[in-house]
Image (cartoon, rainbow, N blue to C red; front, side, top):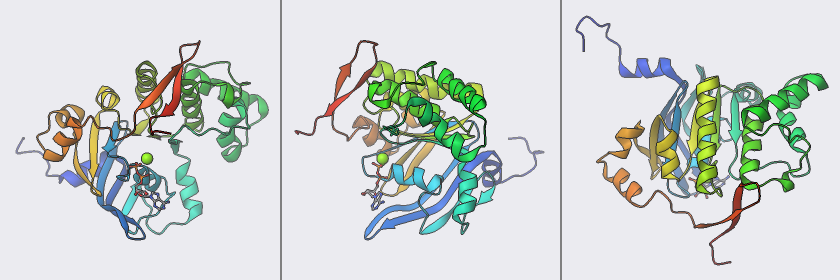
Length: 284
Ligand SMILES: Nc1ncnc2c1ncn2[C@@H]1O[C@H](COP(=O)(O)OP(=O)(O)O)[C@@H](O)[C@H]1O
Ligand SMILES: [Mg+2]
């Protein structure tokens, strides 16, 4: 390190690069103390993957990031705004900067693909029908599925549903996209395609991405940095290559376990090569 460099504490430096920070975030549900002091900074333009066992609190962390849950203690700073104590109206404004791909890629089943993607646009922007159609077409093009506006969710395979969920998440041109288990239920080839889509949104649009997954192959293929959640805390966080080689015992044991504590899935591949989850091996 150069001696003439201006002294700057690491926290100052990471603050300036961070789009979103969680500091000492705690959350309990009755006696279930899920988050026990989460410290995590998401840097602009990066793909950060959050790993952790089933029920460890990954989805709860994502919900805190967009204000769908409020912390019991600690603070969350979004793009320079300290959200401590702000109201739902201010959160609604902040939330426009986020895209959220929900676990299970939940689409509105009674609405066409067009109306699913148009939904956030209608809610937040006053666009004419022509402009709306252009925006929807652009979103579908971005996820490699142009021209399926008229289809209904029930007609789509699992891989297509995930793509439409991503198309809806990018409709408002968000600065950050949160992906909750974006490839669960997909076969390896379609998982890889979703991974490539996440990377291309970063590369083409500079989107900051937070990905929750238990799929280690996907994680190490696409991530700039990786964080591991265990017992309510981030026990390791760093560049993907470093985490993969980490000697931290919690990381070693998580990676040795394959990362997945979830039940095995059964695959169904349909005629267009898209696959979807047929069922989860839960003995049912
Ligand atoms: N709305 C809620 N009310 C009560 N408990 C919840 C709620 N959401 C999550 N939890 C609990 O918090 C823990 C973490 O859940 P979650 O974040 O969904 O886990 P995962 O890491 O699998 O995404 C679980 O014990 C879950 O039961
Ligand atoms: Mg979850």
